[in-house]
Amino acid sequence: MTYSVGEIWLLIALLGIGTYLVRLSFLGLIGRRRMPDWVLRHLRYTPVAVIPGLVAPLAVWPAATGGEVDLPRMTAATVTLVIAYWTKNMLWGVFAGAGALALLLNLS
Amino acid sequence: MASTTSKSAFRQGIVAGLPFTVFAIPFATLFGVVAAEAGLNVVQTMAFSVLVIAGASQFTAVQLMSENAPVWIALAAALAVNLRMAMYSASLQPHLGALPFGKRALVAYCNVDQSFAVGMARFEAEPGMTLNEKFAFFMGSVLPVMPLWVLFTWVGAVAGAAIPDAWALDFAMPILFLALVGPMLRTLAHVASAATSVAVALLLAGLPTGMGLLLAGLAAMIVGAEVERRMGH
Image 1 (cartoon, rainbow over the protein chains, first blue to last red):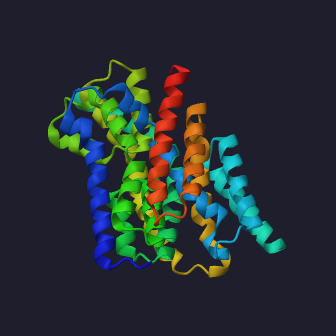
Image 2: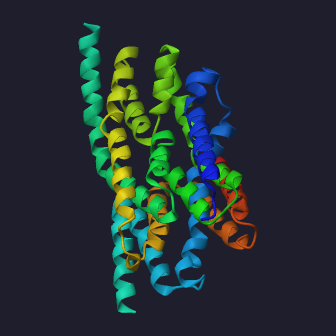
């Protein structure tokens, strides 16, 4: 990481303030005014829109292999997603994915 | 009399919040570990968990920091993950909006996924609750989770420094993110949104760090909302 100490604190502070203002928005700042439906509809998808895009390049071109597609990591990624989806439980996904990765890395 | 019912609402809130500790403890520990691996010191890591208190967003920020994305891109992506909380704020407003500003400011700080879910479920199930009971219940529901979130971030940050590289921790973050996404894929619209995000992010991977992600997020939001609209929810 090449972030300077100042940049690290800047990011923490702005993210903290920004997140707080989002949390406070309707409770403290905007009050009873209703948000248009189309805005609500878009907000509903923010986590699911950002996180998969963040993880996809990491899973397909892992840093640990210098960006080469890696079968154990790809398999572990798939196992994690399938188990987490199927059980509706994040922790089972983590355990299954980490287990699969440990197993495959030790086999290869 | 009012204070007795508020006290019991507070206790009920604590009970309702307890199950979330099972999730918060490993999640916070992992955040501490990952942040330490990325090169943040203990104070910076703790500042994340105290000031931001939003796991997915904290992980997003740390991941982009370790990829050396520009500050504003890391900020935009991590903040985008938290935009859903504006929706929480709007839903809580009819229930808690009549509180004095100081209390509303406190509710906002504690407006996290868990307290929102538990609080809204209770307020809707029991329309007879008074304003003070609702406030007491809401605050009770975060009491088990928030201190543990902070404490175990610290545990992870301290432990992270001692973990050997052989543990393939490089892949802890992808596994964690995928495990977070799995349960979010509740409807076709969510699946379409996630698939768009993956496709656009991979296609635009050549752009400067983080740019592809912002565009992928934007496209995926639009696709999710559009699929939902066409499905007529």
